[in-house]
Image 1 (cartoon, rainbow, N blue to C red):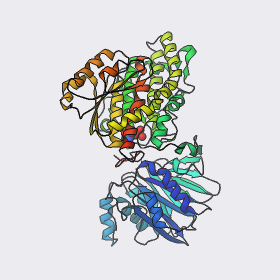
Image 2: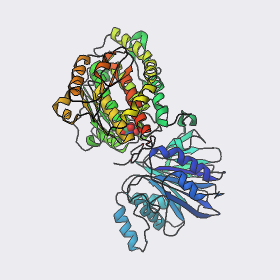
Image 3: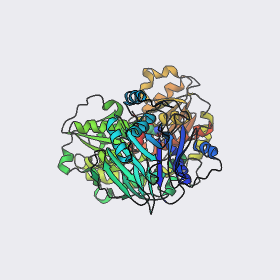
Image 4: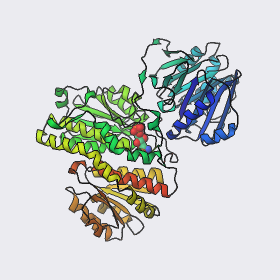
Length: 608
Ligand code: M6R
């Protein structure tokens, strides 16, 4: 989705802004633009396409301006074009605005402004907002922005720059993240800390309904209603190095190789093997409250939804708590049935997904406690949850979520473990589980050691157009996640089913051009899965099997076999996902796709 970076300080703004934009590229965008005050005059450059093309357009231009803002746009209102790209400038040519989000009542507002003789150059809601601010402006920029925002409905994270106020940026948020970065004699604003963490780790998160005035050495936060807000800065816990490729060809590959570390980070300090216990500090529930939970509902989207589906399996298996997983986008409108014994988990890597946030608010409206399973510290869902678990995966830059998935399923396992030990799980079972968890990251490393084999196989599979992914039990969501990953980065059609469902319809599709990836570890479904593989083989279907080391017998049934180490039956998802993430990656590389920035996708989906 769109990205925002703004700077006011003592250094020339141009390169700081362009570098910041590059750090936001992973969010997905189709056009980019920049605005500065050069010799006091508002100067704007924008372009359709990549930031490199914007830089090419700027050529050798090096503005001296020490204030400015820049934006990457992911089209919502109006197709990608230079006119629709941000910054948008008002009809006087003195005021510029960048905006993430959607102004829902922009049509009415536009008509009102047109009646006043204001002509519009673009199809965007943002150009309406900049002209609305301009229409209300009488010399006090902050007040004009506050008054304009009282008239709009919708979501926004904005930054405003005006020729009359050469040392000041105004920023505000409602539903789209805005973070202030506090430096030494310079200040930043961004939609995501990644854009500014190279310059400062000292950040302040704006809340919905707040506006901030930024000068080189000061910042001031108020509400849209003009009440003063005091908020301490917090420190970003990761370094800019972690948000770099570090020699890997793509962020996605680096992040797959960070999966063992993602599991360690999510477990650190939370497992006590000697007592066979897991303890999560942030759940904000007493032991009695935990025992009182009779139902769990998990809300999430995309990969986080599939992690939730693995979580459902863990919670039912280890804690014996009935669990349902719902697409957040459905839950928010379904008038969900919730009572005082229901606990809701909202799962989100970014913590900014609009559907998940709306679902969380809907659950809270019904009086239910919502806990977050979140990666991005300080994100909106993290702040609005009633407690929860940070997975500490570090920055995930590839649009396709990988290491965060491991972090999310680790969090669910620990929650199931903690709840389970308060209910039916024995200490002996707890010790066995804890001991296996401690060695599981090394087993993920071992699964990654087969990366070259995956690369070889992928060359061949890249020539197919359609794929089935099959798995049973907790490996069914792994099949779903594997299929999603393949389609989103390679644009090949792939769909997933519980293995035994094939014979109820999908098997009609099978022929020699429709390969099936079957997850068949040495668990309680092993024999049954082999029978299902035979059914596919009997119809000339090609098989790629993912199984447990030592089960070379699979080579007799499958065209290709990938191996993972042995583990406890319920824990196989931590291992079986590894070859599937690698397979999706290698197929996409083979097809020369833009792996880290796949077409049409955004890292964080902050609109409905
Ligand atoms: O940031 P979130 O975890 O809330 O994002 C949810 C989905 O948008 C996300 O997982 C999406 O499906 C990814 N592109 C999957 O790789």
